Amino acid sequence: MSNRGEQSLLKQSTILMFAVAIAGIVTGFISGAQSILFDGFFSLIATFIKVLMLITAKLIAKESNHRFQFGFWHLEPMVLLIEGSFLLLIAIYAFLNGVFGIINGGREIELGLVIIYAAVFTVVEFAYFFYVRHRNRKLKSTLIQFDNISWLVDAMLSVGLLVSFLAALLLKSQGYDEWAVYVDPLILILLALSMLPPAFKILGPALQDVLGIAPDQLNDTVRQVMDVAKVEHGFDDYISYVQKHGRARFIEIHVVLPADYRLQSVKQLDALREEISAKLGKPDAARWLTISFTGDRKWIA
Image (tube, rainbow, N blue to C red; front, side, top):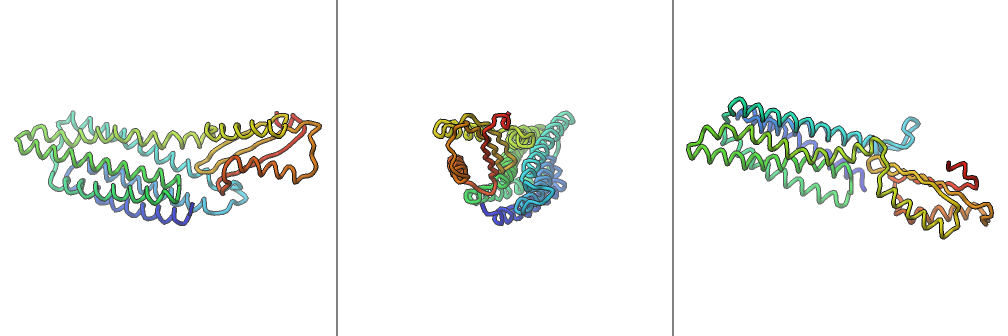
C-alpha cells in the first residue's frame, strides 16, 4: 500500500467534506430545515474525523522511536473508535430532535432550496464514494475503507432528504399542508435510525482492536500453521499469541524442542522461521512476527 497515495486521498476527502458541511449548514439555516442542518453538522464532524485520520496516516508512515517502539499503529483503531462514537451520538441527537419536532407540531421549510441541495449532493457524494472505493482497491487502506463509510452515509442521507422533500412537495400540491410540516422531523428520525448500522460497523472492530482482543481469523491461521509444523518437524509443543491494532498484526510463537532434537546450527532454526513465516502469508511492514525456540517448557508456561 502506498502511504503517500493514502494521505493524498485523505486530504482530498477532507477538503471536499468540509465544503459539503458548509453548504449543508448554510442551506439549513436559510431554509429552516433541521434535517439539512443536521446533515451539515454531520459532515462537519466527519471533516474533523478525516483530519485525525490524515494525522494518523502521517504518523504511521514515520519510523518508530524510543517512546513508540512498535510505531504508531495503535492510533488507527483509536481514531476509528472516535468516528464510530461520534456517529452514534449524532444519531441519538437526530432521533430525539425528530421526536420533539413531531411533538411540537412539525416544521415549515423552504422546499425549493432543499430539493436542489439534496439532488446536487446525492450525485456528488455517490460519485465520490465510488471513486474512493475504486482507488482503495489498489491502496488497500483500512483508514480509507472506514473513512469512505462517511461518504456512503452522507450520500444515503442526501437520498433520504431528496425523496422526503419531494414527498412533502407532493403533499403541498395536493392541499395537505398540515401533513407536509411533519416531513422534516420524520426524516430526522429515519436518518438517525439509518446511521446506527454504519456506526456499529465501525465501533465493533475498532473497540476490539483497542481492547486488544485476539482476532479469531489470525489466531486460527497461526494455530493451523503451527499444528502442521509441530507434526512435520517433531516439536514437543508450542504456544502462540496474536494481537491486532488497525492494520498492524503482532504474532508471537514460542516453540519447545525435544531434548534429543537434532540441531546442527543456528541456520537450521532460521530456516524453520522462514518456513513458518512463509506459511503465515507474505510479510509486510504491518506484520510483527517473533518466533523463538527453547528446550525448557517453563519458558512457555
